[in-house]
Image (cartoon, rainbow, N blue to C red; front, side, top):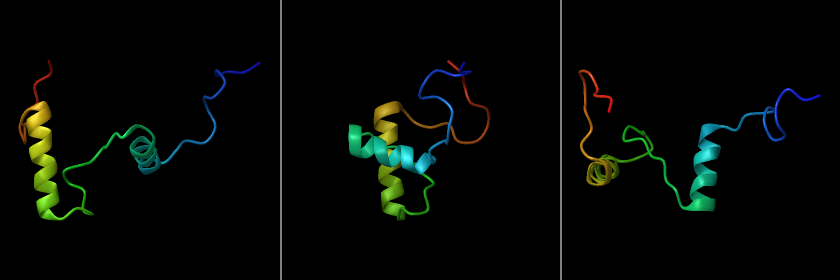
Length: 66
């Protein structure tokens, strides 16, 4: 008898692999504004896109929930 349904358990995928597959298979992009692989203009663009789509980030202090 299995403790988990089929497909669960086993080896976990690396988060970078999940992001890579999401991009290739579904066109989804998960990018951190602090990713050191990006240049400062690219990080600024990510910040602008995030603000446009989801609103400005709360930096420092307490975050609101809901």
